[in-house]
Structures are given as structure tokens and as C-alpha cells.
Length: 273
Image (cartoon, rainbow, N blue to C red; front, side, top):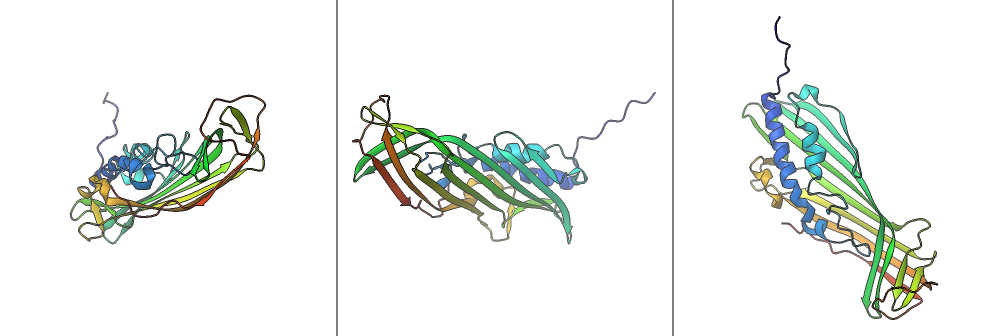
């Protein structure tokens, strides 16, 4: 009796080359967690967009892209959509096609995560105010990355096209019905229902092209400095406090019935690593 047939685990040439390029990108992509503004705190809420408790860019592309595709042996088995479960929910959209003599693998990653119950932190020197509340702000982050990979069977080379893009949007608001608490000296205070807070930021990353050929080959994809982020946005808060019945731990700053901050605009620019 012949042994049962065993499916080959060896990918064909085009799939192996494309997966190699994907792996190079996702490995280097871990460095995006601390690249420029992705490694800086959002105003008022202290959340780092690329950090572990936010988008977790240190391993996001590894988990959401490479791990979904690594077992492919042919592009014929490529799924149109891969679901992403857990706190970083979303989907990976994938499409294989042929343009001229070039094989393409177009990937779109969409991820959303909400960091709930973030504390508010406000400080100023004129007037001198320092206030940190308990949780009360929900921050939603949405990432969209468009990653067009390609393979040339004539040269057996694979690359990521220079027009790869990545955007991250962050939106923070006071949670409905939230009543954060804080302290001014020995006086405990509550934020009143009339308080408002908004944080809006947009981050965009574009890829460099060191040799100007429109392609990021596997040797270039190992460098985090190929990508640079810009940031724009605004943040504003109007916080009204009332005395709490229970005492609170000591904190800096004189008691004030109302604290205002904003609007502010996070600095913009193209920091790169």
C-alpha cells in the first residue's frame, strides 16, 4: 500500500521571493514603534501611539502580516481577507495579480484599537497648575498601511514599491458618563459633567528611495530609516472641577475651580530614525 501523499511545504519561486520581501519589511517594521512622533506621547492622555498599550508597532506587522502569509506555498492559495482578532482588531486584505511580466502582491492592513479609561494630565506654569485625574478618556487609534510588493520572474527579484503608505489616526474624547477624580493639595476634586476634552492627531509615513528606482529591494527593506513620519493635529481641554466629599492624596498645584488648557497643536515635521 503506497504511503499517503504529503503536500509540499516548499513555496514556489515567486511566492518564496515575495514572502522574503514581506519578512524583511515586517522585521524592520518593529522599529516604527519608536520612530519620530510614533514614540511620543499624545497631549493630555500620555498615550504613545506606537507603544505596547496602543498599536504595538514593535510586533504588529510581524503578527498581522508575516504570520498570516508565512505558510503560503503558492499565490493561488492566497485569501482575499485575513481577520485579525484581539485588542488590535482588523483585517489584512490581499490581492495577487500580474501586470506585464511582473507579479504583484498588494496588501492593505487595517487595524483599530481603543485604549479606554486613560487618565488626563494637565500642567502649566502660568497660571501654575498641575492636575492628573483617574481614568476617563477613551483614545481610538486607526492604522491603514498599503504595501504593494512585486516580483520579476526574469530577474527573480522581489521588492516593495516606493508608493507604500501608512497612516495612523488618533482620537481621544471623555468617555460618556465618566467622572474622573483628581486632587489639589489635600482637597479631592471631581471633574464635572460640563468638562470637555478632545485630542485629534494624524500621522503619515512615506518611504524613501535611496537609489531612485521606485523600488525598495530586500537589502533596502532592512533599514528603518527608509520611513519617516509626519504629524498634524490639535488638542483642547476645558476641565471644570468640584470638591469631592472624600479627601485625596497630596498633589502639586493650588486649588482652582476650573482648569482650561488648549487648543494646542502637536509639532509637525519629518523625523526619521
